[in-house]
Image (tube, rainbow, N blue to C red):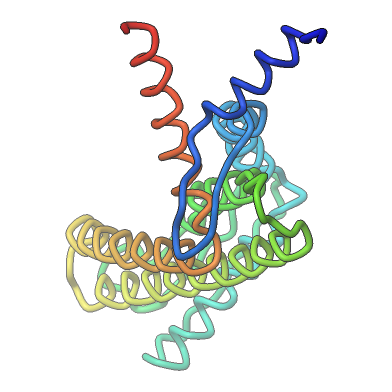
Amino acid sequence: MIINNNSTKRNDCIQDRPILHLNHKTYKFLNRQLATFFIVSPILCISIYLFLGLRMNYWIYEFTSTFISFLLNLLFNLNAQVIIYPEHDIFPSIFIPNHPFDGTYAITINCIAGHIFSFIIGVILLVPSSKVGSIKKEFVWRKIKVLVISTSGIFLLNVFRIVFLLYFNFKGIPFDIIHESLFFLSAVIGALFFFIVLEHWLPELFISIYYLYRLISQKITKKWK
């Protein structure tokens, strides 16, 4: 009998890989999947963030500013207005007349939670699928649902954060105090919301992180035996 040593070693490696189980499902990932996810995801997140800052995407800031002004006028009748500058490098602003302070607020990339959206999109797009019992179409559909639900929820949460921030500042509360308070509150709510959405539709994100930990632990244990 002829034994292929390379094939035997490959099979041993495959058998030695950890297999995780959750909710009656089996999860197993390849090294290249994990490498792509943990190495490329940060690069993709940074690229998306830089892309959102381009002048061609200023319609996002204009839309957000218009929506915020609409809610300010609808809920509090503040006569808020949107200022769009002809210069290419100036973000649109919201102006509230009869304001006790300045009354002009620039809506920048961090105001629209651009860093959060970049993180969500960059991570979700590259979440690896299990090589055991995973259906590609179903996995892609779950990714789409998570993207739509999480980005929509974070967008609305952030818009209402800004609405109440501007309203309370209009009422005389110092900007820094109310900004930090609402930022912390919205960050906690947003993180819980994102965690629940992922846990329900895309648990592969958490499982792949734990899988990498198990894989590294397994190799370190074998090395020191």
